[in-house]
Image (cartoon, rainbow, N blue to C red; front, side, top):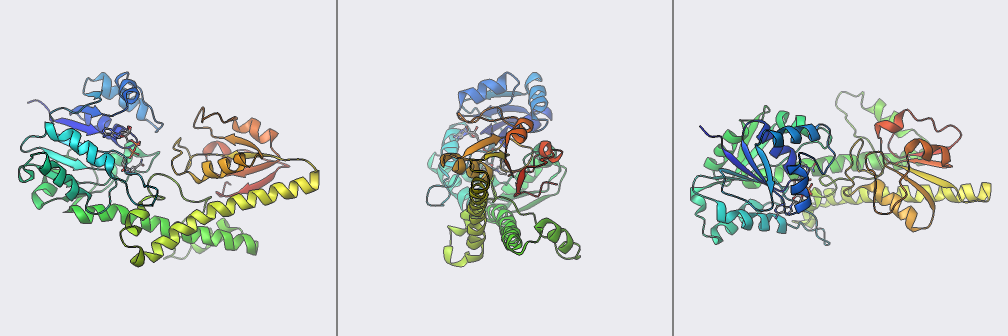
Length: 398
Ligand SMILES: NC(=O)c1ccc[n+]([C@@H]2O[C@H](COP(=O)([O-])OP(=O)(O)OC[C@H]3O[C@@H](n4cnc5c(N)ncnc54)[C@H](O)[C@@H]3O)[C@@H](O)[C@H]2O)c1
């Protein structure tokens, strides 16, 4: 019997590993991306993003003949949508990519197909997808439509795609069941079913919860700085309490999920989401505070040495050991310092180039710098010995 055909729409950090996983499990996968270069790269068995193990995973999927990338969809048994859902300027979610992906697959959907939205989405988006399908002439009573949020940790995606528990929210119970049956063919974690709205809110809730807890750690870090207390030691000690688990502070909160998703809730009801809004603002403030700290250190250095210091900004990614710069506070801090004409040495071991920035290797940057600012806890930085340098540590490198 021929294996099911799966159409994965959007071949980025989520869609590409998912497409490769399904292909390696024997499904015939038709990957779709609107960017021709992405499609060409994948068809060569290569990857356009950095994720540990993804290159060989994609290579084997392509070599097996089970994964092919295209710019347009095709008739399939399952359609998975994993396109971006960015924030618009007014901090409201932009679901236009989801809508256009839905419009693109609509002509290829037949009775009995399973359509899954994986993109992080504001509550009600799956219902909007249903409306778009209906408007395209599809009887949504005869297909299965479900929302299944992705909650992998970048850097550990390939393992977590299989191991994590999953929530499948059906537009009706039959769709939830159909989604569960499909995911159970490749997920080892528990698969929990609910309705689409609850599944949408669950993803947003998970990230708003983390954002709020990181805001607590960031607030502590500012207070501790003034009180001359090592915040990482403090948190380590406090976490010995059996019911306390404080997260780690940093230079802010970045990435496509935690820094973004709380707005999907806040913008739906600003009056009732005051705590989440304050947390979001606190995390944004931490980044501004960090910029102020570095600028003060530069001023002091100038006063003491009568020259401009060279400042190594160690790390640009939004978290350790990845190349993802989206919503990165480290990138933002570095660019703000560069915009001010300060002598900045940007360092990011996980990328080769960024715009026209003079990226430098971490060891030579360390040698050259007067002030070393640790922005990201990359593994390469941990063994460095910035002897004799002024160190500003926003990420607890130790
Ligand atoms: N990256 C993560 O760690 C992560 C984790 C959980 C959830 N998510 C969510 O998953 C979704 C996808 O995120 P991502 O990180 O994979 O994004 P991404 O930007 O890495 O990839 C999205 C891809 O979709 C393509 N695309 C855009 N519109 C398209 C269309 N109409 N048809 C086909 N392709 C299209 C883009 O060219 C891009 O290659 C987002 O909603 C995100 O919030 C991401």
